[in-house]
Every structure is written in structure tokens, then in C-alpha cells.
Length: 207
Image 1: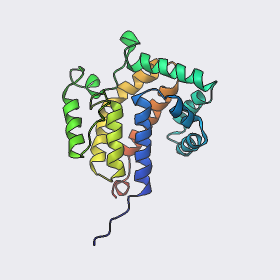
Image 2: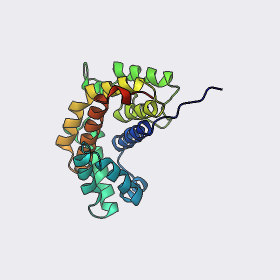
Image 3: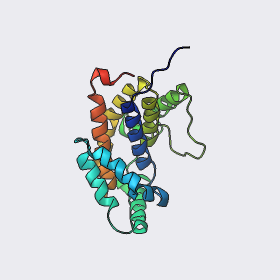
């Protein structure tokens, strides 16, 4: 029997970060998620991230939002802000978190949708039946990246490069329109995480 090499902890940690960021950009935090973010486990997770100098300022910004006020009021504030930014309630200031909106013709449902859908199929993954987002949604691409990282799949490098190529303009726009600072912090964290992954040493890219 051939022994399976264990997946390094660093890959698991990166996968957790991508998945966590995917959740933040998929939907506003509901009561249970907000409780988890403000609870001891959430605080410890962010403290671990903040120990990395590249992530410190972004985590500080997220913490400032989470530490402020009543949980119910905060949940309402974040939901309103998310809906305005990403779901059309912001009018012309609404941002699409989909790759197609930021590349090529900048129209939705273009080539990136089929490209990411094809990669999902190759990985034997499918979107949940209740997921109404296209395959090139930022959260979907980040969740796919989390899967690739956790599996030690070398295709994670290509997906990191892809995300790094189309997200900067979106993340800059998020920071400009976010009225809460929560997604501005998440945008800074994602930007720093992508830059860090792009600059990994060769020995850090292998299982």
C-alpha cells in the first residue's frame, strides 16, 4: 500500500482563509454567523490572522466593526450595506462581485462563467441547488480555491493568479462605497492574501 503524504497545515490554513472570505462576500452575516464572528472562536481566528503583519490592518478594521454596538443593530446595518453594495439597492453604485463584470465586455454571464463551471466539473463539484449565483461569483471562485488548496491541488496557483488579475478593481470599489468598513476590511484582507499567495516561495507551493 502506498502511504499518502499528509497535507501541510499551511495549505489547510490557507483553505480556511479562502472559505472564510468566500462567506463574507456571499451574503451578509446572519444572526448565527454574526454570533460566531463575535464569539471567542471568531476572536481567536482573527487574532491568529492579525499575527501576520500583512493582515493586521485589515483585521483591525473588521474587528472595529464587530466590536461596535448591539448584535441585532449591527446585523441590520451590515445587511443593508451588503444589499446596497451587491444586490442592486445601491442603484448605480451597486457592484457586481462577478468576474464577468470586470473583464472583457464587462457584461454578466460571459466566458468566465463557463470557464469556472468547467473547472468545477473537473473537480467533481457542483453549486448547491439553492445557489442563485453564477459560477464566476467571487464567493464561488474563493470556495473553489479553498477546495483546491485543501486538496494540495496545483491548480490552486492558477486560480490565485486569476483572482489577482480581476479582483483589484472590484476591491478598490468596495472600499470606496462600503459605509460600514466591514467589507472594506475584507477587501484589504483578500487583496493581501492573494498578494501573499502569489509571492510564495517555490517550496511553499508543493505538498
